[in-house]
Length: 361
Image (tube, rainbow, N blue to C red; front, top):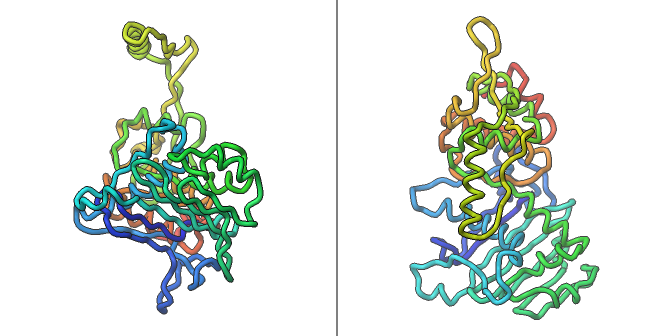
């Protein structure tokens, strides 16, 4: 459960900008608010919409959360031991190049509120911290200043040994998770589970590949039907790989062999097949007709991805960040997704809600 996110000195964001999900104490409609003892008001918002003029920084704020997530998950594997830290500081103020970029986040995990953050220059992570925040006071789990680490008595484990393995250009949280630290591995896992949905149009075959090994949630199909997309079902269809596709794989192998002296061996075996998702529509004669995803609109394909991620996030109680929600979508479809997130039955009765004849989306 995401409570707060703040960023400073990143892309177009110079001064500190903060987004809080804590509901205000003003008396207003409480429909859809989520009970949360970790905030002063006792309630948090289930969803927030950022809106404003073009080039006002909305996407960069979303990008900042994605950047924080990537630093946590990949800080050590992406960087060379002496390679510094890759960042995108604010360029319009010359003074920002010498200032660290700062990222902070508060979230609830296993019923406990955590406050985590770090600062980074081009050379290294200059500070990093993690606290638990019960009602009465804040508990220090660890604090880092350059390569100096201080651990609180609440953090058990091989902390000092992991600190010695943490490079200046990697995060302690990453190193702890890679070394099997019990508590910090769970905190690390929170970042892994944050879902992002970009505003790009995706070809049908790529959408199909996302569902190759799993079924589409029934709630997704119900939702698509409820907003009048014409979709009433789906099926998966296996097809043989075309000779053109196999020939393309052989050509890639040949090019890699010629210029790199290596063979990628990406050509599929003779039994390999491609799985295509087809969406069902009701024909005039009452029969269900299935369309290849490339015959569906860009909006329907994007809805299929957004809704699948949204239902998974609802089931697991995890955040989903959607950049440009209205891209390729009708205004009513965007509003319906928000209403889904803000329903007072969210996480409990959302699937049955979509089937209620009295509900109009």
